[in-house]
Image (tube, rainbow, N blue to C red):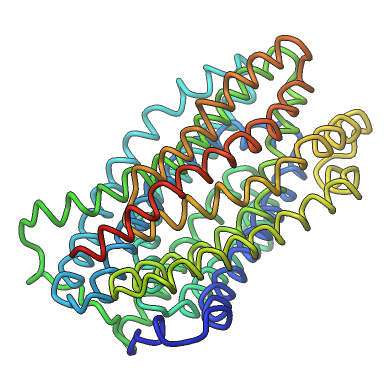
Length: 450
């Protein structure tokens, strides 16, 4: 497949053709997250709380896998745009090899660390037991997830977004079907409870990877993954990690943020941890479409930057910002209109629904300004500028947000934590605007002199 269409088609149709499959696959993934949580909540509210406690570690694993994939995606798209096919082949091969190493390390590390992690948040033996039973199985699939996500980013880098849409949708479908069967049992299959939810997740990831393997066999990637390309190339690996590490930290910081908020909320009541966990599940309906748009746009920015099409890079950025703003505005309207209905999906307790609806109504005001931070960070990753992208996320999830949440929590209790969301999103958006405004001209000047 010739990827030159990425610098030839009109901007809006091009973004639509690249982003729409990613958005669809992300929405399907969001649906899976919601359905998975609904089935877990059917076990008990305690089971849902246990999964919420494990979620930051899962998010960390995803951050490492996706972050490294983002680095690989950027290098491949920039190299192909510049006509450096051989370098792209070496990058792809190194990417798959390193993904296996990352997965093995995370499997061992997370299974070892999860007992202490859970005890840091609760002394409830029942919660800890449920969390351990779920986490050990989920983290056993870390290597499969790592390789799966690297192939996803390689398909995206060459413009084959439909493949990743089909693969992710298939994996989510298997997961959704597997959840009720493995959790509650069916015929000869015994009821596994919370372990069944974990096995369904791993099964979906495995099917997704097998799908990519079949597609690669029948319609090979534009880049070649081969042992002949597996040789030491320190400079290339430095470029991969130079983008991948900041990208992983970008995602991992959200886990740090979530852990910190759990610590702030835990002294008040487990109900607030439950509400925060539900919010993050619901938030995927917004984050996944915007992330899908960024996934589609990132290779476009990288390819056009590599090809020297700097005017197109600027137009792609502005169009992406507008689209992400629309998604976030829709989320704001929904959360203000029916917050009680959204919370009612996860619990029947009237007190929890009321407290959760109040939280959603406060948090939602930060959605629209977050579009600027998300778009600027993703565009900088596509340009191969991982550090300024990381700076935006660091400001968003640590430097501004944590002091604001801590201070407001001390004064206003749990409501202070919810108000911290819209405050730090507004301040982070201003910072993102200045950072992108500073680095985008620098990138343009750098490219024009090479």
